[in-house]
Image (tube, rainbow, N blue to C red; front, side):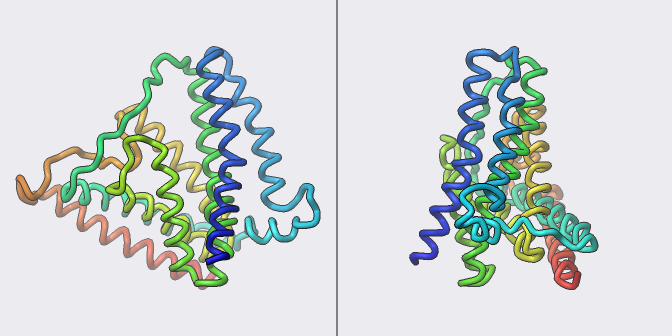
Length: 271
């Protein structure tokens, strides 16, 4: 239990240290000077300092090795990079299909999105790009590095990924529309990213996929007014209307993509 609490503390500390300043900066930028994207210019410099700290390349030197090991931003075998990305992409795509099925079985909350139409595009676009990169770097460093890494060594990957996923999901409860019906989505995301980090002993592949996925989520939010965990199609519950071809296609797609992801992860181990 002390190790679990310690890992959770450092995971939360690192994610706050990385994402907190960006949340403050972009909020002030949009509220007081939306025509000048100054937050998107300043944040990359701060993110670089954060990254150097996370991987143990800056002061304090007394715990530099510990930070380096916890973050595990290790190089990945080139042969394993492609397989890991295939496994991760298939896993996330399978999760999307799962959400299509899940949304036919239970009523999910309606996502509440902010009105971004008043923000100039020359401020919105760089802010979106920086937000995605910040999330990829800080959340993977904190969650799959500082939190999951020590738990893997003590309890194994299954327990480590489950605990990390629970914390990862609960962090999203800061959004008023999120409740426990959405937890399977965040647990699924944590399983995919957590498996990528575990199989490669590195957060680099999951960091890249996380940042790219966040960019796509924002595009979906802007274009379709749909949050990341909402299904691609909004239809009625099967308990009310019965199943249809779209439901069974999503079930089949989920099983096929899940199988592809599992097989790809097995190949990663060999590389």
